[in-house]
Every structure is written in structure tokens, then in C-alpha cells.
Length: 141
Image (cartoon, rainbow, N blue to C red; front, side):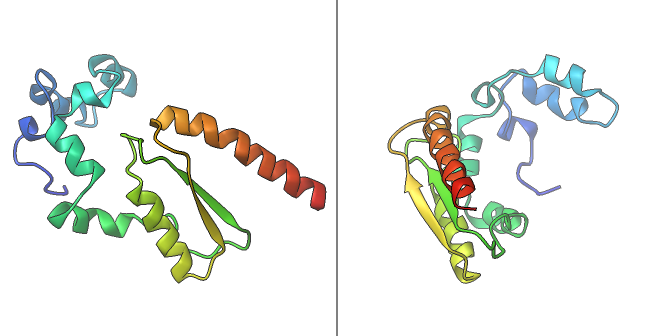
């Protein structure tokens, strides 16, 4: 649909490259699909493809951009965006792109770098800060 690959082996590691398209034919239930695919994306996708998704450019970037409007609005409350430069699952450029969208819409926001940690560790660091923020806001209402 997006022209991301010409052959499944461009994206999927063996043996999944020979069966993944058939699994998503609309006739296989989610339970079966999950049972036949690995739990970790690094085991399903080629490293080259994962790198392209982490930092898309060219045609792929142009095809993904219209779908990336999560932050293209103006919330009426301040927004804090947490990110980690050590996150291998979500590149920090997504956070700066979101901040740019919020800025263009005149929204108050703050970017918080959680340091050089992986995705799960960044979540564990961000959640207590988010809870403190909401607790503080609830006391001032």
C-alpha cells in the first residue's frame, strides 16, 4: 500500500518473509497471527528496515508525514514531551517534530530529555513526573 518494499525479504527476516503477508490476508485471527510471529520487532524486521523506520527519509518520509499529525493542534493546557536520546524504539526527532507542531499552533509546551536510556527506562522515569504534575494540578484546581 505504501510502496515501502518490493519483496517481503526487504523488510522481514526469514522465515517470516515467506509467511507474514499471508497472515495479514484478513482471514487469520489476531491470536493466530501473534502466535506465528516473534515478540520482538528486532526478530521480525531486518535491521535495515528498522533503521529506515527510525529515521525515515525520501519517499518513505513523504508517505508517512501526512499521517503524523498527533501534535498538530493547540491544547488549552501546557504539554510536556518526554524523550530519551538513548531510545532505540522511538527516535528523539519525533519529540522535536511534535514540539515544532505545537509551537506553530501557539501551544505551551516543554521538551524533557530523560537522558541516555532505552524506551522502557524512559517510561519508568517519565511516569512519576507525570503523576506529580497531575497531583500538583489537582491541588490548585
